Image (tube, rainbow, N blue to C red; front, side, top):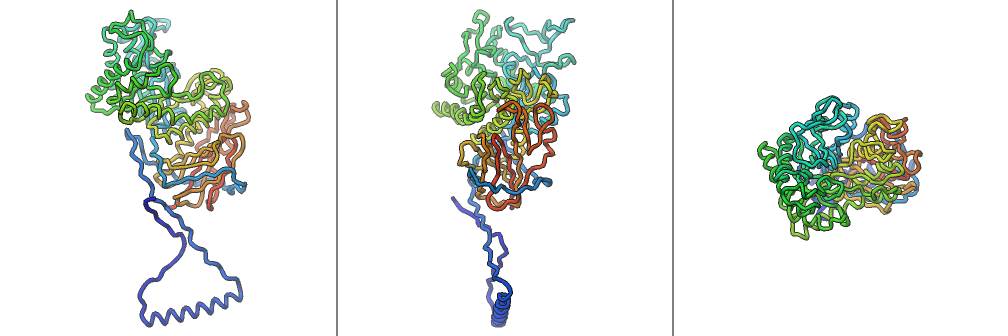
Length: 590
């Protein structure tokens, strides 16, 4: 502790001045009168004890650095004017939580709340209620065009159709790719093309939701292109997109999961390639190609007077079969890349995961970042930001992806991302296909039985309450129980924003001690829980007991639900139900 301030909360007056003889006589007379009146009072009632002032000690807080890319913004919140008044829990505590508001962890990036759009969900930008819900998420950033489509995406092409609406050609023509590659065009201007997002629709959606873009350019074209110089052609395609974008997108990725066998460009036919590339991609090859992209794209940005940031694709962990991928990529691009990109779906592919497996998996996030930073350190390279540009769970078989458990997982991921100082993250994805409940979409795409098109899934509510009631500065918080996690913050406007996650199957009574915080009169809570449908993976979420009348989802009136509120008297004691997330807003006093 480098220093402290002590505040006395009470009504104490201290007289400290020189007195003349007349003043002294007056004080003596007053004291005699006070003694006599006190004796008289003692005959009628007991002596009223003097209550000492409440002392709040505020330690000098530590400083935290600014975030890169201008990704921090101050955040204020208004105290709710309407609430349901409830008494504080009187049950015996089972968990102690301590929040130290003077131990600052990090500023909170406004870009960790991002999401992915994708082509195959069609034109979403003209759905007013969907855009309103997306606006409430304050995503900050939207990733386009989405996943593996990126590596076959020709942003500047239109499709030419025959009388049967089959694609007969492209405008401008695409003549330098193998017949095994089916291009995905970026110009969708005819009404019947509304089944697929185009770049105009993306930009309308970004404008409506006040987000910047993170654009994944077509790196695969540099591999499967059959021209004399496919790398230059692909880099030119990307640079022209930078020009067309004209500063609407701040971040740019060179390809999507290009290390994966499922990706266009991972393996090519050497007989069709004219610049001597190997059949299977390597980290060194990708790194060399990435430098060409970076130079072309930066030149385009300079021409239009815009600043962009460009990232390279890395692996989040060892064991993928590409053991040297990060080492070779970083060796090539470390002086040129602005950030490194990873993806994670946390649970094993197609695993019918249990709740504990899912809810334990976000703790991997710190290790993912370390895997990148350790390689940078090993090569003597400068530390660089890490972006998690796709995340969700692979779990399937019990409708885990559309359940409230996936919402709890989302809360944990956000908390761990912030704690581990990630600069940006975007969840996969805004909408998808039902597929019997194996659907990662935040909104129902319209083929889910009993659920309206674009109705919000449970995860939406967890993301909404987290970003709204979490401040702009994360502070230190600890819990005495491994199954009760806590993430704490403070708003620029002074209030405390705390998230409690109970991963256990039993109710916990949590007592919170707030250190170095000058509290106000009340605190407010929103508690998110699941329902009784679908076993362990309820497709409903309840917010302070409110939910939807549909078969799945959450309360449509989520913005107007009243918080529960209690008087703040000493420590805070809260009952946290099994498998619940509680968002706690605490008033502050200047």
